[in-house]
Image 1 (cartoon, one colour):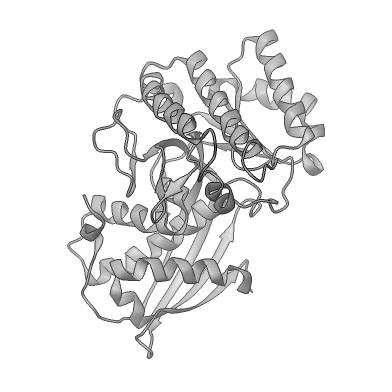
Image 2 (image 1 turned 90 degrees about the vertical axis):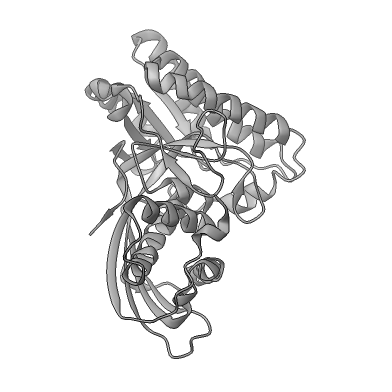
Length: 357
């Protein structure tokens, strides 16, 4: 499928209101490095979360200018002009695929259930929710759009706002990027990983330890740019491709030991790329490392398959089977909570994806 397949050229304006909830996701195999217009240099696989979500409501009305879409944006019920450049860029990128959007004014209201810009993929859930609202408008003009094609186009558009947003529509597992492991994979949009997933991974837990809920010093967009010309980039992309193939088998057979090996390797590889870029930088903090060492010691002494992963930030995602929840929460409260900012952590688990309100 080519990008042109997503063009819906019918021009019309109408009033429409809609609201969607889209989840964040946590990558198991990491996407880091891109080319072209938000295309990944390597495939990635993620858990879709359940509690860490963005709720976005959009009221569409006819726009008299009919030259470009106009909008107003509210975050937590307050006008938020700091977000305007990113939304402007997103709308400009998607207009070629839905020209009727030019004839509309958008009143956008958004809320996150988790801290913004702290490495919990807030841009992923936010752009996914906004893309779903926009494709919901398209469906009013294009009623024959199938459910499958609706979500495929929403993933395609969400990707143009934030690459990882492509993975924030379906669950419990999603793949984005072309890989030999999945014949229907694509760089243009994400696909759900549904067939032959072991039952252990359908209710996996992700408890997020908030080491730092402040805004990151280096954005993910800047981090992706620094992969251009990175001395270890090609080897990193090869590693991610190998891990996607290996993880497919793990997800089918339920091999938790191998799952831990792959996901922790991916987390540390991601941050190794940051530490060896030019300019180099660190997003992990001392407490991040303290937590990792505690996890490793705990796993050795208890044989409980608790592992960690990291997104592009200091916070630590604890991954474990649901059956181990009580023991892990006890471990967090007794050993790890002191490393969390204000003792804060978020309990989450894999979810089934976005839903319309």
